[in-house]
Length: 174
Ligand SMILES: [Fe+2]
Image 1 (spheres, rainbow, N blue to C red):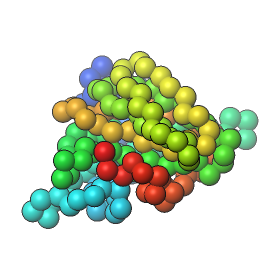
Image 2 (image 1 turned 180 degrees about the horizontal axis):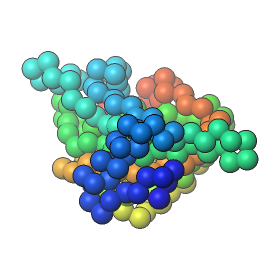
Image 3 (image 1 turned 30 degrees about the vertical axis):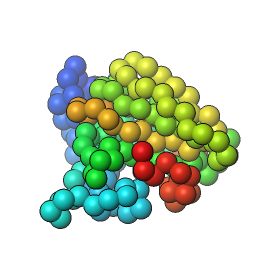
Image 4 (image 1 turned 120 degrees about the vertical axis):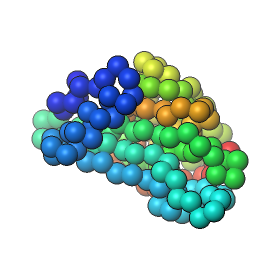
């Protein structure tokens, strides 16, 4: 249970619970990231002018000073563009001390993390697996499977996100 949302045993029920929370405005915000909103994050373009939905993010921001948490559930869909698997944009945290806790909920994905100088580390995300993104590391998730990947992320609400910086970090095409 998270902010009044009860996730179901299958992904369809869980997605419906999340969308209901958004409709009822229970402090949940939903963003859809289509390919057209990810300029520079894929090397190629979809065929036939398509604009596929790459991922959705459901966000809770608890602005209370005593907790100050940011929690997101990301649904990363399967697919490829020019042979490049669907992935999130990825980001650094603006707060250099800001780390992030990631828990797999559904499907199988790969969490990629990288320091500003150094190589990429790949960590599988599976239901129940968890990982702490070290502070100062870029991070994104790639879906190389045929099913959606769903995961929960928790960080400080003030962590801040630098999306532009990761375009130059060398992992745009994998
Ligand atoms: Fe993050």
